[in-house]
Amino acid sequence: MTEDPIDHRSIAVQTFNDTWELISKQDRSDAQTEEMIHMAHASAWHWSRVEARTPINLAVAAWQLSRVYALAGSPERSRHYGQQSLDLALEHGLGAHTSWRTGMRRSPGLPPQEDNETPANAMSRRPGPRPTGSSPTSTGGRSSTT
Image (cartoon, rainbow, N blue to C red; front, side, top):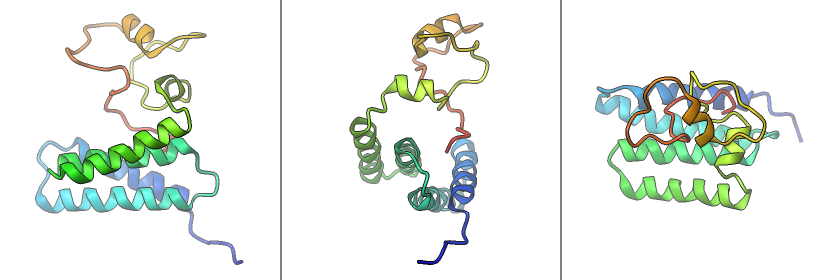
């Protein structure tokens, strides 16, 4: 078998981050929404080709697909990928504590992590007001590990 010359990890990371830019955009055009969907699929596909991928990479890629389909107004597709992400998380024991410990979705401005700290503990120590209805695991930031 020949070695794959494509750097799937770099492409997966770049397309994930580019997708995140469009997710964050308040005034997306229809063309940008379509591009957002295509990039999220590209990121997920490239993660599936990375030899050193982790279940977290695949779960977050599925989560991102769920998010872009929700934003695009496609609830069935959003539920499909949301379920896929949840199934991967449950299958591999990727609860909030796991993503917290690996640095996934860590909110900017949080104080440094302490031993045996949970997201809720850190959020209670966060300076300034906490938005109503916010969740320590829904920070809106992008991940450098995906």
